[in-house]
Image (cartoon, rainbow, N blue to C red; front, side, top):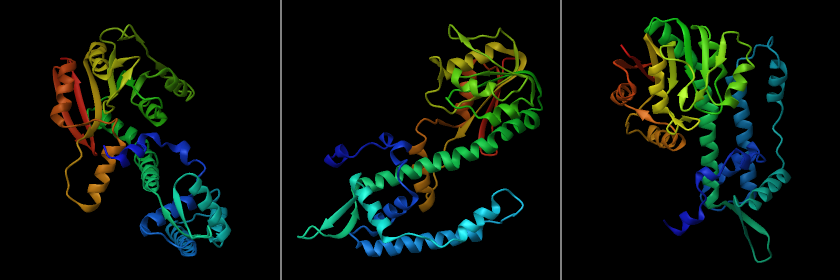
Length: 330
């Protein structure tokens, strides 16, 4: 470890709370400073920010198709047409604020007058962290929340040709996708959810009559042997557990409580392909860094997980970019 590494905070130590009081203009300013690499006069930075804000606003106006019948359309379009207002005093205030956080450095003359400004070693760390948060929560996970429930439903109804009498959905993280619950309630007569207590509190507020919770007792799932027609488990979380019970043990329990003609379905992600491409290399590196809590599997590894848990018959396939493993105990 170098001295610079010792002084640099790890990425995990920076969270959304650290950037809550920074504006979009602050972000743009820091990004422009990184591009310059060398110190820049504040007036030049001011002109660049103004040009950027004007240019980006015009792009947004051109990109959006407005339907004036929708709520807020007229007001939003009018707001976008307003002239960009960014004063030099706003720039100085923002720079002072960023300097106090160690994100920019002032260069001064002998009379203590600021002659130029530049990024610090922490500027890039912060920008990269913000981008990673944006990619993870604003792009990837929002898209997953939107499309994944429908994809799983297609696997159950079309690929497996099933409609479950009783089904168990197991969820490991603190926040449960309500769209999953709404969607899964349509592929079964009775949906049971095994999750952390605080996650199920949000499920109960959905008001679905055919949804109830399950639970763990002495490291075993509450329901008796041969109880469920179908069980669905997300299997991509690396350190997943419920009340200290690891996901591999949860999967073994699934094969205990599944009926002899029922199916256990696990889903996750295939390993990211090794593509030598200027853009993909950067994106792949970031994905691996962002999703350290995600396990990427080969089809063979997924099959082995099912067999180790007690599956007698298995099949594994990729459907719409997602990896699915289906097992039963017959």
